[in-house]
Image (cartoon, rainbow, N blue to C red; front, side):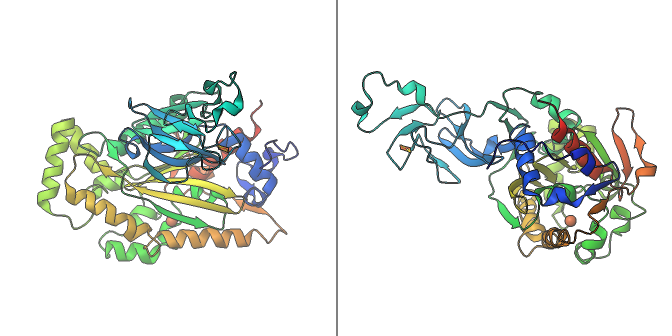
Length: 426
Ligand code: FES
Ligand SMILES: [Fe+2]
């Protein structure tokens, strides 16, 4: 991976307000620029604190292309360590998750504790008496910050704080987490990983594309609602839902009005009244009656924060670019702490029924990405249209831009952020 940005690409000429050039989805030089300017600079979501609840727990992740270990030490502190031995660069951790008090490099046996300190070197006399182990601790990700248990990392030592970066999307994270009667989500139910032959930005755009569900997923939608809710009222021209640009690459499909009318998407169809009553009582105890009921009625928010995290239904989805034309997405189902087991079990089954390899919805989207990537081979006219609803957007009092549910306000939000990030000085 080259690390120098390619100054020859004019991103302002490729990303216009109402159209984008297909080259941004396949050009390897552009991909390298994105890694430098976005993935190795911006705040990137890495893990949830509940994935490493006990001392010694760790998970192996990536920040852009860089392998990292998220570990919790004996004092309960979380560390973000680069997974690269200080001797000759081997990765020191090979397991996706586990519990370890030390990471021992398999090559020559240098050993690091879960704070990253070098604690053991075989045949140490060979380095002489001046050798100071303290100088060879595992490198750390320069900045780490968490919000509501979500841990983000930035490989840049400078830049906006996480809270500045999250901006208006922080309150949507609140909406997602507050569905728990304890105000906490738990991310320990495994992961569904999908890879596709397509560019990473497609999954981000698709996550908040309100134009496609009633068309691409028409069969699934008809089956899931069994004709009870007209999909027209959620994802069609008659929808009361909105697309919203929250700034900084955060974009939302605001389904709150639809959810309130339908009793909240937190309530998967078919669960027992007893469990629902128990959940509602727990919510009212924690938040008070009015707020507890409102949280249930509004249900989970549906949004993304560029470049790599998406919140849909009960899941966190995390985007990992592999190359210009290859991406992996991890779907992490979340549980609501202190919610009835029946509700959490339904959240889990919703994940595999809708988004598993034979799920009702996700395979359609992956097929769409791969057809997109195939279509980009046709290069006589490379422009893609991004103008749906441009003439009918509204500005809300707090500055957020909204559009009709089927409009591309959300895609434009992502591309505005992208152009800004790719042309920023310094
Ligand atoms: S590369 Fe890790 S001990 Fe040599
Ligand atoms: Fe979709």
